[in-house]
Length: 265
Image (cartoon, rainbow, N blue to C red; front, side):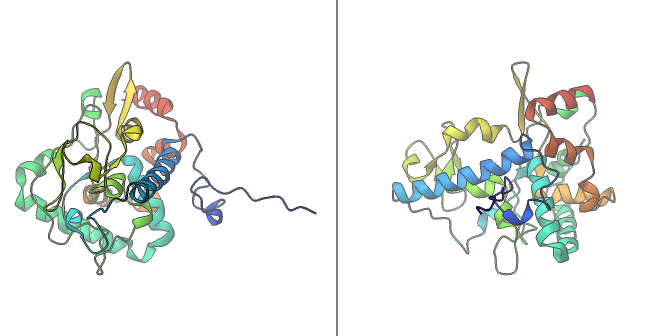
């Protein structure tokens, strides 16, 4: 008798079908972001081989891990699930690292810090949307909260999109910027990087939603600050998975998220 083939979870891990992602709907922003990760990883690997590219970014270099960069609430939810599944014993240490960075940033760049701590909760429609994340030139001596003692990413499997593409690929023709001390993207050297412009709309949708012909955004934050916010409000990662934010990301499509945000703004 032919055995029925077991259906895998959208994440590709057969073991988690009835565990980690059992509450995630297939049309949710969570599921679509997870699939986007997989597609972009595949595209990068294929193009590096196809066009014989030699990215300078590699294992052992963590310069960009010492910079402050924002991630979306969707990516925070994905990271949370991974930590609860694979890094339980390290969660408290991650919170402590976040607090250390919080204090360092407050001392080193008070202007940036003031802008950072303003209205994480939102308020009226202008507070919730159309926020461009401010930036700072300071770097973090101890590096990202997920950088381990071997200078490796402890959540590599679910690392944010910026970590997957930084120094390897670009997704906007208008993107001209210094990536690190070794690399710069310009119109003169795009052939050295993987072209992800076909994914531009999907990548933008991580932090921007299209509504009434406009792009609107729920403000992203640096990784450490998301965790500090949870700690300040006495929200554990398990409790975070029961919040409206997590539920919105894990169960709603993009259109449903827009309707929900506008209804409860």
